[in-house]
Image: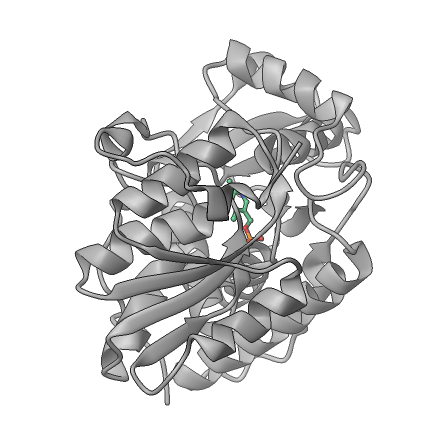
Length: 333
Ligand SMILES: *Cc1c(COP(=O)(O)O)cnc(C)c1O
């Protein structure tokens, strides 16, 4: 099977804008932002580009259901509930425990309002097993975060989109692209895509989930797989290892996935001053990294790739039920 640029269900509005953040740059380094918060007006962020590929693949295989996994407040599960239902699929998700925050509770309520069937597991391996148990001939199974080869191909498309914006003069070619790494599909797709599009940027994937060694291993492997898949589909013979342009620092992770850090909180305040809303689980830690790389003067142009939806959740919560007790057990104090 080959994947071409047309193998998508169209969900997003592209290209997403690129903007300069002049007050946060230095004499040596300019800071830019790629606004993937705006991929869709109802629910944006980085899951949209992945689902364009994943839902296409599910339809091509004539599946009726999507079965996926995530933490209780998973953005990926919410995006799958929304766009999966919109494209005519039933959506089942197996959720794992997460620290309780208002954001997590809202996401679970939105999942329910969108008609997703939610199941619980105590651990991530348990959730993976649960996904298999809820599978079947009619089901398309989607990995955590939508980060399999098919999903990550959406970020190869995004790399080509950025190449077009650079060619059109919207921004200078960045020498570093800083992006959050949860399950790694976004960073892997970008690294593979930049290699294919002839862009030189180092992809700095700020690791926000644990254990970091496993996340690094998986992200590098995914970058290679996606690269070969796409290079093969296009009949290109490019001899390069896209994983070599990936740096995967874990120094902004703190105590673990979903555990806020002081540095993250500070970065969140800095971003709020320039009109960029961040979250403590993913983007605050990543933006702390981006600010560090600007200050380090190692690069001329740093592009922070924004992955969090900025669409208001209120419309999705209008008819949302409360979280029932059987799901409330997932929420840790
Ligand atoms: C899911 C998510 C990420 C992580 O993306 P991966 O491709 O899983 O690494 C980053 N930021 C936000 C806001 C997300 O929802």
